[in-house]
Image (cartoon, rainbow, N blue to C red; front, side, top):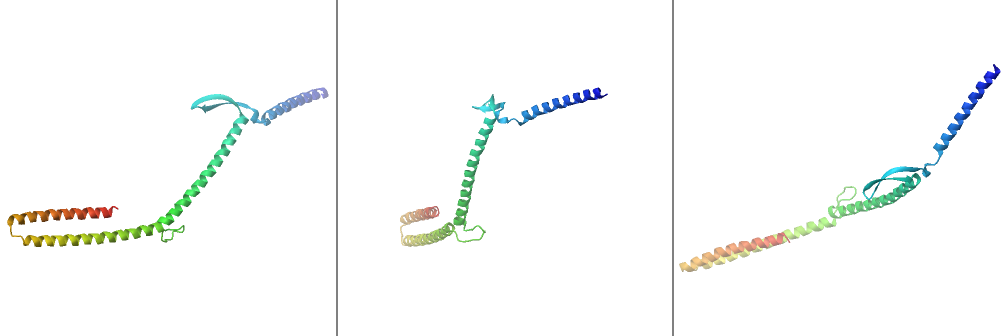
Length: 183
């Protein structure tokens, strides 16, 4: 019985030793650094898909450098975005006269445009009234000279001339107003 027990114990010990050796081999495989492993990958080169064998450590280093370069680029883009936002805020303040808190204040551009608009409207009103008074005075003078004319043929010519002048005065007045409005 002792011999049988000893034999079974030796067999169990041999199996345990084999299991431990196998586990040790597997642990070595698992704990080996992957950076030295070669892997087959599919990649784009020149717009075409190609297969190639690369060292995993090299690809990881390339990817890391790519991420670092993109991180630098992203930081630069965020700085540009902040500058654009600041410029929008500044222009908003200048044009609309509103500060960061939404409170109204006088913006230079807006007040300048409003002042120019008032000046323009005033100039248009003055010129329109002057043109109207000149037209009215000219028509009165022409009608008075028409009444003083006794020759029917001459009177007809004067009427035609008055109508033509009236049309021409209206055209001139219209073009003057257009030029003032679109300047």
